[in-house]
Length: 137
Image (cartoon, rainbow, N blue to C red; front, side, top):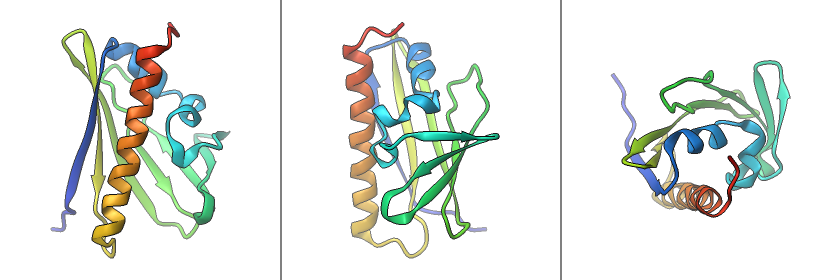
């Protein structure tokens, strides 16, 4: 049985977890905080299509809306490679924890893995800033 090394990247957000989930789970909002999909996503049936920049068009499928704060999603690259991304919003007293699990896939160098982790940390920080400084709900 194979398992990949994993890193858990999280941010605490001073906002009710349900509000964080409501905002973050909307694919239409992703361009505001996920820089890798800054061009946004376009609906295509049950999937969403995004521009992955130099890697090309990405197909993204999100977990159905749920009461547990799960925003897991699968990204399909142009070559057909599927990458599972676990993204969770959980309660933390009156606020929330946003947690992303980054898996180190085969062939990913130390430098690339660290760059991916830093990129995700910046995105979660952007989400935190938006939700702590904007009154949306």
